[in-house]
Image (cartoon, rainbow, N blue to C red; front, side, top):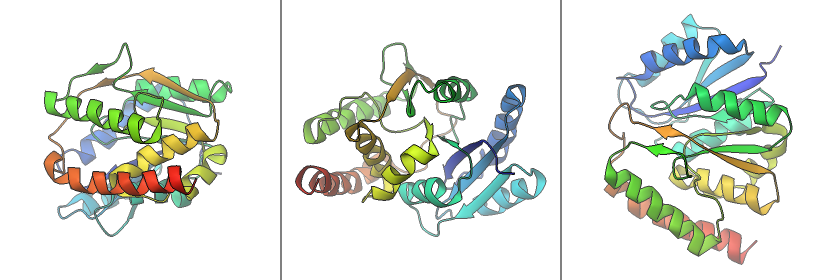
Length: 236
């Protein structure tokens, strides 16, 4: 029998925290008595991430993993949503967050039909962004870019989100960009499709430094954002 909930987590060079994070997540999900799976979407790691993911999958029946083959957060996340997830509800998580409180609140909202998608916003009133100031400022700037270029009306697109898979599957399939900007396109297309989206505040605190240098990400993000702007505003 397929699980009710699929938790998809992209992982890249996470040997330092992967095992502990998955074990901790399993423990914090235990009180919910859910039927769930954890899908580790490995993408291009050069350390022991694949080996550790395989060990976790062998030890815990609810853990699965796949390797995307190259460093590509968005590509791995999209494959996890479209091809690998089996649950009627999908939660997109981050290995350094794994916020079980968000999971519970989001699943409750989805189960009652209050929303098609729930986004954990680190910029919404009531949230607590405890990351370094540069990363917080980058999130604000990026959100501003999305507002100016694509008319985005929410407060966050990256990080924690949950949704009903059947409803959002066509949206994921329609996305044209990958890497970091896939998550933004996914959320923006959901808004433009008129789906019911609810944001809830979350507390964000990093468990380790970013696996990819922020400055090195900027050119690729801007290039993908230009492609996305063309795809959505020009082509529709």
